[in-house]
Image (cartoon, rainbow, N blue to C red; front, side):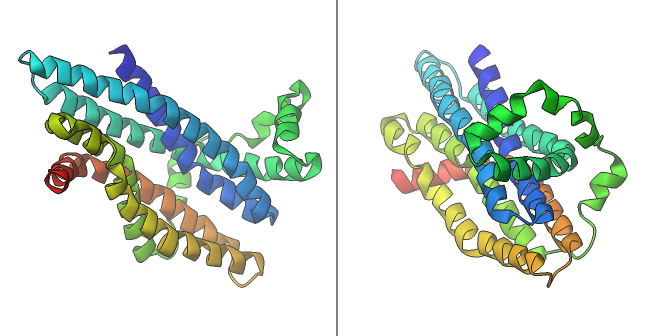
Length: 267
């Protein structure tokens, strides 16, 4: 249970930081420094990847324990519930990111300006750690309200991007988890199954690289040139983070089918 608790917490951190990258991009647009915004987003990405490194062995250990229990007459019901719990943590992390979204948008604009001034990430971190810098932090904190949340999805609905982002998020969220669960269902091919998450995540990578990121980049450049109003990107990133939430919910439905599909492919 302790290991599962750590996995749950790490999964929340991973999806909170990943989702807040949209807030940093929007902050970069507001500060008209999108390149620096991507650099600051790299800090969140580092937190996410570090959490991923710790999550993987813990999750794998849970599967190994379930395999050992199954050999002495246990069942896979508890493991499946734990796996669904991990996906639930992804949803919780995304909800937390939505609640923090307006605050991070406001603060990220300041972080980006400070990065331009300090010139490096380590110097920026030292700068932000100064006690004097936190005296006015309350000014940037924005308490989430229902009207604020609904404003995130105002304006035109980018249906294609929403569907793509839901799909990509669902696949990424459950890819590794489904592969590990498949390694439990087919223990004879356990190693191959646990290493086969790329068969699932590869589809998401292609969709993200070819269809989602280029579209967001084009819209961002048009906004910087004044061809699109900033409110358009406010709405766009709002829809993107909400569609991420929907994707984590869809992942719950894909967990077992994708594990079975991997078993069919690898057997």
